[in-house]
Amino acid sequence: MIRTRIVLIHAFVCAALLLAPFLFAAATAAATDDSQRRIEDEIIYFVMPDRFANGDATNDTGGIDGGPESHGFDPTHKGFYHGGDLAGLTNRLDYIQGLGVTAIWITPVFVNKPVQGPPNDTSAGYHGYWITDFTDIDPHLGTKKEFGRLVEAAHARGIKIIMDIVVNHTADVIQYRGCAKANEQARTWWSDCGYRSIADYPWTTRGGPEGELINPEFEGDAPQNQTEQNFARLSDPNWAYQVFIPEHETDIKVPAWLNDPVQYHNRGNSHWEGESALYGDFSGLDDVFTERPRVVDGMLEIYKYWISEFRIDGFRVDTAKHVDDAFWQRFNPEILAHARAAGIEDFYLFGESYELEPAALARFTREVEFPAVLDFAFRDVAQRITTGTAPPAELAAVLAKDNLYRGDGRGALILPTFIGNHDDGRIGHALLAALGNDAEDSELLNRTILGHALMMFSRGVPVIYYGDEQGFTGDGRDQDAREDMFESQVDIYNDNRLIGTDATTAKDNFDTDHPLYRAIAEMARVRSSDPALRRGEQKVLEAAGKPGIFAFTRSHAGSETLVVLNTATERHNGKVRVEIQSGRWQVAFQRGLENFEADGRDIDVELAPLSFAVLAQDSAGNP
Image (cartoon, rainbow, N blue to C red; front, side, top):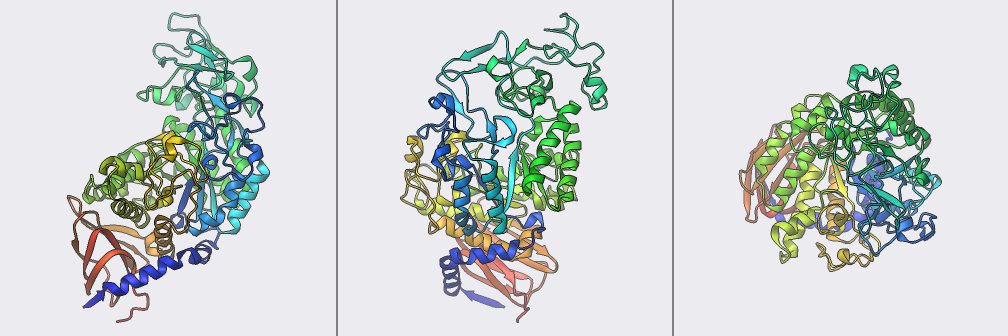
């Protein structure tokens, strides 16, 4: 039996945390020297370039004349460009590397429509999802040369670059007569046009079943009909609405084939149910007719170019669930084959499908050729466990369904896991919503670290949302969760309460001494140095039915690592039995471990409230 005194453990961990910023250049390099490292070895930092760092103030307006309603730059407005760019991101690679990450996922950097929306409610394409030119970099963010510099500088550090891409939609350019209105101030149009179904508005009549016959002999868009010959018969786009493109935008999209309205579904706004989820416009954005062979060919050409030209390392695919399966069944294998031909064996391709049930997520890996999907099921439960509103047993139930993913569960090892993001909001906001604005900072800090530990040590590829390591909280979803890392001029950001610091977003927040930065960096080091934590099968040993102990092992190549978390606000003991008997266990990392005893396969861990410990076998097998 081995009894470990907590005073020694505290000394070890405190020293490690103090040294953490100096250890990570070496630690990251050690984990990333092999450019062909496996996907499950990655730790991702997810960043929105416009909100991260401004390295070149001369591109803030994107070279567009006029005011904010024209060029989209207004650093005081949460919905406009703020000035961050690729040069700024490159300049801050030291900061990112110090966090221990191995890959950076960046929101789309393609040319966007600067401003969209109705009068008095416009916003800008700072986020990157309103693309007009898929072949170039948004001038607000920089140039292709600067993007190349970012990729090259990241690769030199062993850090991979993952691009966020879109095939489901483009910017809102196509308009529908009768429900489109002009926003003269922003020189744009906007529509609030309801969805018109295929049954009520067939492809072969204009304005309804009794309308003028158009597109004769078109046989529909079912997979068996997705041929060039059939779609050559679909030449009139006015099946549901009379479409038009404002005169000054007739050739705004690149490649040029995207300017033809027949390449879009043109059925009005999605209401997120039934067929509208596939054919409807995503909040007014032009919904691409991805069933058309020309569209599949065109999107493949676009994204193969970015792989060939810049040797990027992966794609996160936006709104994947709103695209037909047949598109992905061709697109995904061809993209992966193209990457392999370019020498990128472990190209990381993962899709976004907002589903909270593992079975619905797993379908995309088994049927739709996605190697991985963002693990919203994990996010949902892990976030609620972190806030104290769900028991560990709920996460155990999610993990029990890992065998649904491709590879009979091995596929779960490469699912991107996260506890907050740019759409759903930050973990800090979830904590304040659950605990109240008067919650003690110490509890908020402990819970935030606990949530990151749950993500960092569980199966999957952890994704750290930029700013979480600085205690950002935000005011909610979307625009409210996209604060500036550099000095912010947005009042509703600057009055936010941050976790673990007295700072505000009115000053830049690249503090490598922030307790969250240091804790996450140390967890990243522990994960990167332990193959079991990266590649090992996860087995749940104990999962309380109320806030309390969550214990699991990660096993790989004859090695086993034990992780025990206490999600309760009271001290708890975890008594577990591991698979492999070890003569000695070492504390790899802990926060609040009071003591532990190991007797063969039986381990007893005592944890303070909201704390955790990672115990690894002594590789030397010392008695």
